[in-house]
Length: 538
Image (cartoon, rainbow, N blue to C red):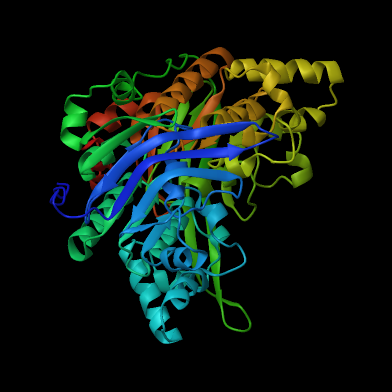
């Protein structure tokens, strides 16, 4: 159960009073994404800030540490521990950041330094704010990695961010934020890339730290089930305003504002269209194995293997969606890379459209790739910021040798199919919300009219209302185009709404597979039961 709110007679740790955030763009033009936000956070309290993408949640949170770009203009007050940070000196802000106030950013891949090891990045935060030896810093780093549930942390100290899964990178971000035992933790979508069991672990960890150290938490999340179970109070944001704020139980049971009611009702539900009885087998995988060697020493001798995918077999028919679920690091994304042959050190067979892809060279695979498309987890990283939307979607078409007029027509039709304005093809990715960027990524894949679409966590970074929109969009597109789909996700509610069958993975192995209805109603394996209990707990 959430901790009770601190005594109202106690001075709050954080006071945000009538905060306005404006951005100077061109000339006298200004945008105002935050329009007079006010709230307090008591010592030891968890306040959740919820709302759809673009509502101003992250901008409000980043304002507490004045992390916004130089063209940001603030009005109002943000008082932390008696000091207005909007008036504070640069030196005072430096003493707060990463020490008194920790922050978990939403995008771990863009927040972590790709050139530094995990140990170096966590230790650097310790050295900056504490007088500590290298040995003590390593011990604290291992303690933090154990706390956040990173498997085999000793083996991960010398790893780089690109060698970890999305969920593992998020755990590193959480460890860095907690390194100096902050008084306030700003958690901006801290569980976005995590599976349901680890979400539970992380929130329970934050709860224990609140109880032990009086840690206050500002939680930004689109996962309303977690908010309901762990937050003391909830503030709902829409268009830069807080439209409702209340204790958690009252807000969920008796929402007052129309937008809050809409937000709580936006649950992915329903079923995908049925697979035709005469649908042919499109993909047949037998005993697929992908092991990564662990090398140590000066001569980099192989001392073991990480069994990312270990003997997986599955079949997929045309027009069918297979949901693949499991905790972070279970091998879901690695399986997707193996199927698309974006990683080549595989054994076993991957028969796609009657042809085994494993022995084929990259040149031989080129003609097949238009029928085998993937949508990656992170639309921020997978869409080039230097290309317009039209150029991004057109990249694959250029290889088909189509006339320019035909290319333009297919780009427009692809944007219409994902319910975006065709005129948006002249704009750039940074001008769109997260949900719109994911639609662009789907359009880029669908423009080639693939037979198999692989979606790797396509809704993980999206708020609840946009998740429901993407689910409905995928159902409609599959019904219209008949493609098969591998849908990889840790969000079991979304998986249930889009999948005909489900495969459960753990540590590279297949734990259980069944049709969606049977697996969700009668799970056979304890691990599957644990996942479902964590996902559907109230």
